[in-house]
Amino acid sequence: MIVREFVVAEGREEDFRKIFGPEGIWFDLLRRSAEYLGTDCRLEVEAERRFRVLDYWLSHESFEDFRQRFQLEYEKFSRLIASEGLVERETLLGSFYRGDSDLDEGIDLVSS
Image (cartoon, rainbow, N blue to C red; front, side, top):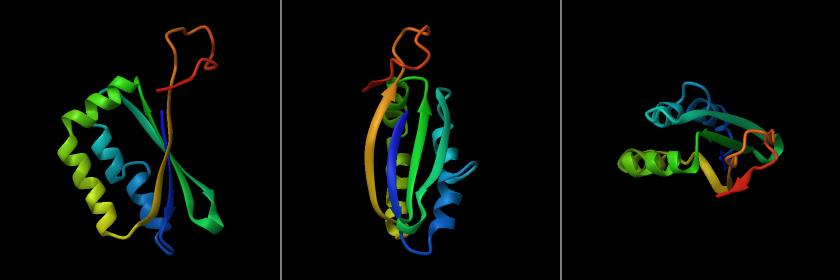
């Protein structure tokens, strides 16, 4: 799971939801990988227009492979977001993945 926080430009919250929500441009880009599991886009603090986006991957290597294979498209998406003035700030909060054991019920999440 890759967790990022975004502060969205005032009045652009709905545009952000359309891009990062289900069936949005972000989903269309990431689903090119068979190891992409989905995205959760949450409004964390309405007054601050702060969203949290969680991208779920089978493994950290899955995401890194995706970024390598689709680097041009990924960069194009980043430039589009920047040029639209949609986001005031983006912060990577971390990457977390399950260890090899399925017995721990998620308590073995580790930072990548």
